[in-house]
Image (cartoon, rainbow, N blue to C red; front, side, top):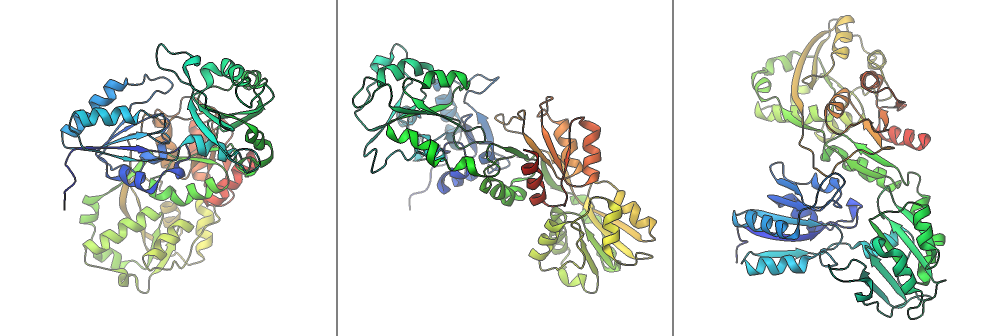
Length: 493
């Protein structure tokens, strides 16, 4: 069997914007890459799948940064592949559709660098589909052509060949839109009254659909302040956006929600939010770092002596399981102990390892409420509190005030992560704060630059910490669940 070379390049498409439109094979390439050279249109969620030690470099143009020239990108691919790395060149859409992959493959072949190519979902198909436009239709269009309106240096619009198809899809049309519409109005079966639709940032929260004709579209573009990136669809099917635009009807369409959690914690939330039409951006500000020294020093005898175990997070459950195995123990050691989970996610994590919580206060906002829901006599109870370093001691103090003997076992700590260059926070973004630590790390990062954000909190403790750092309106979920946070978004729109 021929072995995979130690240094090679994969050219892959990341899809049109919605991160769920990436192929399984491209996602696997992200997970395996040593070096990722990505374009700015690649959704930041996709980069969360990269290895923790992967080198992730933005080579595409974005606001405030200059793009690298193609020659520079070529040299980066060569440099890292020659050093024996698995290099991923990650592009928006499909790399073979106006993505310059042909030039890059020729360069790699000329330098004897092994390469492979992974097709992607092209914006030419996906963006119209997200706007309700089928680019072919039995009644309107039996042929389609995809054209770039971007010319090489020295070329003009007249150098672009326009095929005789019933649907034309133009990528990068904005620079020459007025002249392009004039030229198309006299082409083949088209007139100035031919339907034409401009699609801005399709498949994302910023998606806008401007429906007009070849005559009216340039003026509509100006009235709606549409800028690149956008796609132009021309032909009878273009008008179907008015009738078949399905995405606008979703309850959270147009909302951009920022999750400040790890990728593993965010998967179900991303699925929930996108099904409702929102764009979910997962920014793992924090990563879990096990407290190895403390876990090594913590004696099993303290666990054996406790009659009540309180787990404050799903992460704590996972780290405790690792500690058990390291100390040659398993869940049988919890026999005859009361198990308390703070919140439904912690309860689910316990169930995953075979433990059913006796109590789960999940509709509370304060430490007093939580203690009331325990419904147990705390006097002289020997409680082991399994938590994180730096977590607030409000619960611990309240337990002691009620006569409990509390031992604190700090299983892990949260530390800041290095954020991809393509991440930004915009005016109008909803920010989900699920703990006091997410508040601290968010405002200590470079992400917040006084944008007009809309924060949603779980719990009054998190709310109080946030109000120390933010003076605007704060939304408080009615329950300690992400479902409740989404409900706050729908009410606050």
